[in-house]
Structure formats: structure tokens, C-alpha cells
Length: 261
Image 1 (cartoon, helix red, strand yellow):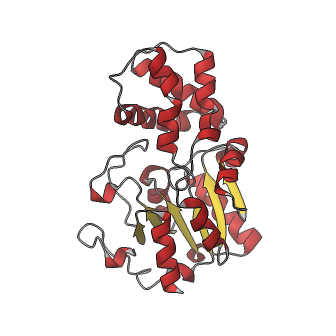
Image 2 (cartoon, one colour):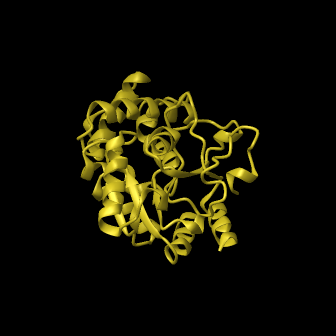
């Protein structure tokens, strides 16, 4: 569903884009984890060895994901050049310390390398294949190249470009990441800022900074935050960005795209 047809009570319509359809853009730039890959399930599953090793049945999924969000946000800002597998290992250690759990290098490292096991959302692969027939598809991700390669196999699509934190040297929401992406799209594909729609789930990592950067955005609100849902593994932001399009799944976005053709 398009934002200007729904959720008017919470979000204002962006006058500059209210008449735009998804088919009007030349490129869709995607956050991957949380949008295409179910990172919350992946993170929770990867945390089970630590929880079971310490026999702590009191640690709920909600508590674990919230602690992850805090630790990841801190670590990405503190060590922007650290490769994501190593960063996740540090996050795991931080989670253990927060809950007063005993961990070790093996558990930390296993968690750090867990991205390859994180599952895709059921609608991601089919949705991307439909969109690929009409638009350039680009990834802007906070992981490293090797970790993303495993996720890419699950998604089964050849993206036109992939830009990772490993390439850029900083983590979203640092403006460097969006500058890097938009400059490369202009240089390599001759795609201008207003021809790009940034598609993401995370307000913290993506949507707020993308709007600040001048990009139109589609919010894939898989957590149902616009309906009062939980923040999960994503750090909270005080002011939500006003999306140009609001969807609750990739399949819903594809339906809107097909209707606009």
C-alpha cells in the first residue's frame, strides 16, 4: 500500500512524491538484513548456544534482541572499520556481559559467523525476481562481503551492485554509506538521486538517514512499528522518518508496483 492512501493519521504525505509510483524509479536500493533476510530469527537462533550453556530460560527473545540492538549500535559507531563477523563476536561478548553469562572465544566466534545461517523472508526471493525484470536492484548493507555472499545465495538474485560496510569503512546510519552508494550509482549507472527509491525496514540504520540524504524511501515495516509493534533487534529512534511508501512485506510492495504499471 502506498503511504498516501493509508496511515494518514500518523504520517504526513510527502508532497514531492505523493504522485509517484514505484515504477517511476530507475533503481531500488535495499537494506538486506531485516528487509530481505530475517535477521531477528537468525540472531535469536544464533544466541541459543549461549543461553543454553548458561541454563538461562528467563532470557526472552524480546530481551535478547533489544540487548543486541544496543550492543550493535555501540560497536558499529566505536569500531567502524571492524569487519562484521568480528563485530558480531564483540556484540555476543557484550550480550553475555549484560546478562552475566559465561561465554568463550568459540561461542563468540560462532555467533560472529552466523549470518550465513540467517534465513530469508518467505516473500523476498520471488519479489526480487519480479522487480529485477524492470528495475536496477542494489544492496547497501552493514555486513561484510563474505557474509553477504551466503545471503545472496538464499535470495537467488544477481544484484546490479552490492555496497557493504567492508567496502565503505563505516556502518549505517553514517552518511558516508549513503554518499558512497549514490555517488557510485550516478557514476556507474547515471542514476540520479530522485531516480532512486531506498527500501528498508530499519528506521535507525536506514530510513532516517536516507531521508536526510534526500532519498525517497519505502518502509518495509515487518515489525509493525507503525501499528505499535516492537523494535526488536533495531535501535530505537526518537523521531520516525516519514516514508514515501509504507508496506508490511515485500510481496505487498510488489503488488503495488504491478498495479502502477
